[in-house]
Image 1 (tube, rainbow, N blue to C red):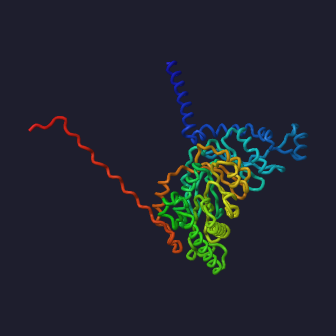
Image 2 (image 1 turned 180 degrees about the horizontal axis):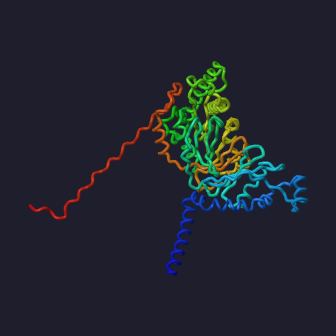
Image 3 (image 1 turned 90 degrees about the vertical axis):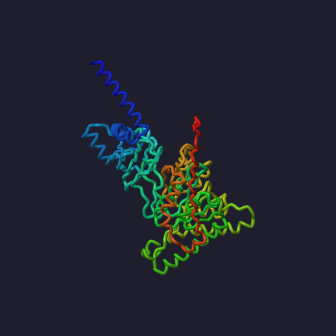
Length: 450
């Protein structure tokens, strides 16, 4: 009987160890909640003071505090770390709120985030300032970007489109009211097209007009034709379409002046024109020319595009510019256009200069992160903004067929805009199902006898 009990205990221990190992690989969220969270919480509580002191995140105590410690408590005066105000567990990690002592700033804690990550044994540590004097350590217990899946509550609403997942487990959203113009760059097979598909799938569900400019003969945007209000497939057609958008912008400004408002969203709902999102794929095709006589048309198109980027936000026209490389070497007007694009998303690039073009002028610290993106993680990127903040993100894998199906399902939301009627694409015909050939009949092995 003793041997049977020992055998059962050993078998149960092995099964439990195997289950924990399986959960760590296949169900990391479950593993974190059962095993990782208690271990990390205990490690953080036990080693917090010494870790902060080693990382240089302590200050000398005040004179009164030093006097009390030396004369009343009869103990050694030690440097003071940030005060832990709150520890909140989440499904992906820990959220720790710290009260910074006098002499420390959030930048000091952010500079030590990599050392804190190794000290507490977590996947990543990001620092966010919640209010003056308080920061939040967002510790992620496992690699949430390995298999990306957006939460169900992340749904498009009011020009806010959830596109990707950040490394701290939060959702990266594209908010056109806060960041009206954006630039997305990335090398071939870096996931730039996947990012755009997720964006189109979210915008297709909203009451907005979508305008596509794809100078590669429409190979990317033609599948979105049922939901597009306009589509340009070559540089000449793109120039005419941009001229029509500039003319519409002028008419909308006249409407704002007539009603004495300075923003489209201040108009009454029955007078408000429909917002427009202009999706530009491979912006370099608008700059490159093959002969001298094409330069005048190119310069006119680029300057019109710069005008849209500078003023169109107030009238509800937003730009989403994509390309492999975007800098001053493209030609006149490239730097002026890039300066108006507030949001920046940089995927894997082929050279450091491309990452500096996208992030160097707004978040210099993010350039190193952008150049270290692995090739085996398509869709991984670094997102920055003009506030200097940046974060690592990754978009969920989306096939072209999924994006095309969403555009067909929400084709009824495509607004009827007369000024874009000459550029309205024809909906692609659905290919008929391939007929199934009849199954050949096999002659009998024994011929029938009369």
